[in-house]
Length: 341
Image 1 (cartoon, one colour):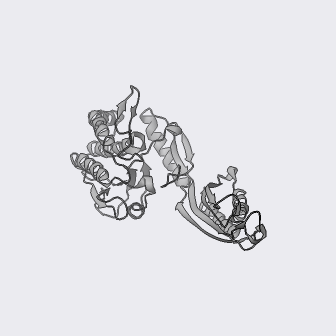
Image 2 (cartoon, rainbow, N blue to C red; image 1 turned 45 degrees about the vertical axis):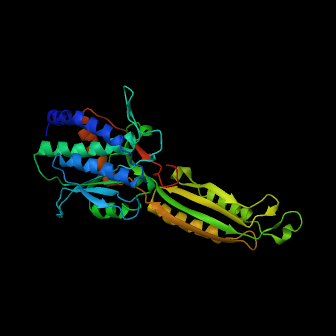
Image 3 (cartoon, helix red, strand yellow; image 1 turned 120 degrees about the horizontal axis):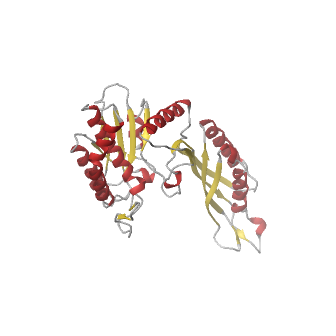
């Protein structure tokens, strides 16, 4: 396989790829727009079919009606070594958003989902097209999944991804990030998310405050205790990003609720932090207050193992032959429904 041949094949599909990007970007595929997701999925499947790549449609079970994930299995179900490709074609822009069209600014394309991640999905698709052409093989040792619920946490597609990508020799995510300066992401923090709700006893703040039990103060003890778990050198951050409590200013508040977001690097950190949060929740400083809480792993960490380092080295070697260079970085986490990245 020569560099010249790769470049010739890439050039042969370049115009089609950019035309496909323009058409795909202007199909509204907001995570909650089932019909738009169906149109986007159909467009991708039809584009692939024109190049003899058969993507199976997997209907969404929990999520937008009419929508489907797309799955390509070049192994034909055989137990052979394979690589994985994962991408998503849903976006965060609803149908009534004014941001619907693609624009060419001269040095970049701007539009809903261009970066996150319709260009990545099409780059992956046309990479498969190029690989078939260059190798002359009708089947490729690759499995690819394009899901349509990533922006809401991949709640429906996660089981599909875990099942089909199990045993992959390597997996590649074709999502670019402007802030990464084109660096490869070789590690990503895990996310623990949850909530805490403290119940107290309401009382008039002026007439009989002694009869009350301040739920906000009890919550404050717990929030500051959790905050002390933050260790930036270890890549651990504990954040209470949303809090609500009380009814009026002159009443001892009888409730307080807060949201919890914890980022961490390793499974060992996850286990330790989960235990420490449980211990904090069981400690009561304000008599007659009670606390309920929930904490779950929304994203396991992607740890930079020796195998990841070896894959990165091989990746860089191939990139150098194509006169490309990349840096390396760790990502702080992922986007979840109702949460920032």
